[in-house]
Image 1 (cartoon, rainbow, N blue to C red):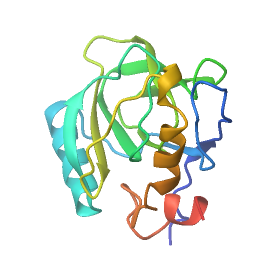
Image 2 (cartoon, helix red, strand yellow):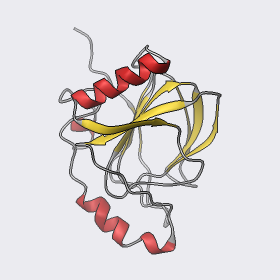
Image 3 (cartoon, rainbow, N blue to C red):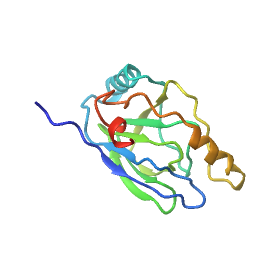
Image 4 (cartoon, rainbow, N blue to C red):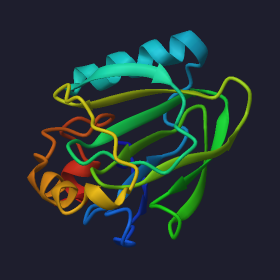
Length: 170
């Protein structure tokens, strides 16, 4: 029997601009082998099978932003990138095709640099539609209230009911 898949975890504190979260960001490294269009389809199907839908294919914005009304999953199916997670005081993280990140509501993310063809599939629990917050002065305290009201996901987008955020975020 194979041991349960354990993601890397990153916990970011509120920096005064980006609220971040009480829950850690989860980074699953090299958890799927399909690439390009086949990889995108695999991610969309996997996420949808665990009720993470409203998916899209694109990159990551080159400015700090977060979502106050939903968690987000990003699966890299092409290329690689250096991302700044958690705002200016957060951490630089390199991701590449085969990686999946679960980003809690409120956690800042920004693309610093990327290879040609860097592309991800993004999705949200139960098909939520994400808002886009940049850490502007007028965002809070309403963004904090929104984050506190985000429902706990029923499943992990990769592992379903068998671990991941279901056990780590409790």
